Image (tube, rainbow over all chains, first blue to last red; front, side):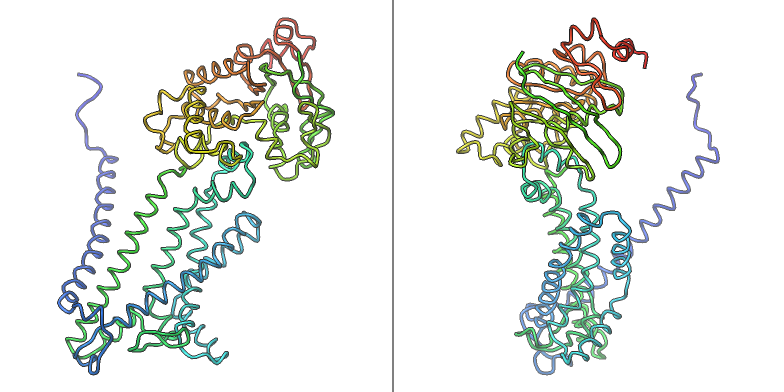
Length: 290
Length: 251
């Protein structure tokens, strides 16, 4: 008989099997929860999802089950999230660059990162309340602009920290390789660093967008809600999360069903954005140095 | 023997620590010069002084001169990007740029605007990949990512990329230390082939490699040049006790 005997079930093998079992159970629970969520919004929302839902604004009696749709909320959410993401990007790119270039891993660098992480953890209702207080102090009413600003504040820490991690993983060798060929620092930044970091930065931006478009509590205070399509930054605007919230709270079954349909639309938007970002970063990632 | 690079009274400090002490050497044109010595003796520092890479480290102080055909590369009027175009570097680990094989070779030519149109670039890419001995292996997949190559191939790509900007000098900072024996041999034979056209300066910590490559040898110890001269003289008859000990493998 050789050295390889038939496997004997020892304690370590049992442990291995047990741990594997726990991991599998965890996976099933999490995947199951996701599946269940999707199942519920599809089953309950799909019957109410019609062309009118996505192309019309609420008509008279909409909230009692009559005609119309939630185009106001769809557009409102897109405006809010796009505006917030754009504004957050304008600030987070320089902050991330400053962190990398000047603060690095210094004491102040660590403080700034800690502050951003704390901001990341603050519940959005607190942001909403903060925005509301600020608006009262400044005499501004609930508006698209106020919603955009507050969403930008919510997205900023996520985007900055995600970019910070991407930039920190930038290999120094790469800059040196480009410099050794006689590049100026600007050429290194534009042609090499950007190429290496673009996929990560894209992911960071879309992460921020995803957070922004799904947020209900902060826009409740700051952007308000209206049945009209927003035509000005200074007017209030509807949003999908609040459309879900208000309609689900209705006593009419038809309206509740429309709430699920709104949730379905929101989920589809988020899904499209995240699949799109995956596709984009896979394309951009083709040449990056791992 | 014509001098290409002359280093005069070069002192380098990293903060308060002195890394090079009053270095005076002459590096001959179109020969392979090998800098050797124990770890931390300043080999790499000396090498990096030749393409002004030292200033990439914060807190570095440099005094003295490095004359390239008589021009001090540390002169205020000298453009550092021109220095690095003339003095190419083959790093310790190959570090391809985040782009395709083709674009890696094109990159340097492109920033220096060396070619007129796509046709010229294409021809140049082929030419330099052939010199680096990589063309046969990659000509069917020029647009694949450079990272899809093996480490040895990547180093040859870096060589092609460096040669494409038409340098006069090639610096090699232990250019084979990350490679397998066959790839190392491949790089070594490229360097020997190229020495007719380029002044080559190699840092190595392997004595055998130094013996295989060197026409001219610089032996350093603790930031000082102990001995410099023709390889055949230094290897057969070292003038200094320290060089003799190093060559005999006593430390």
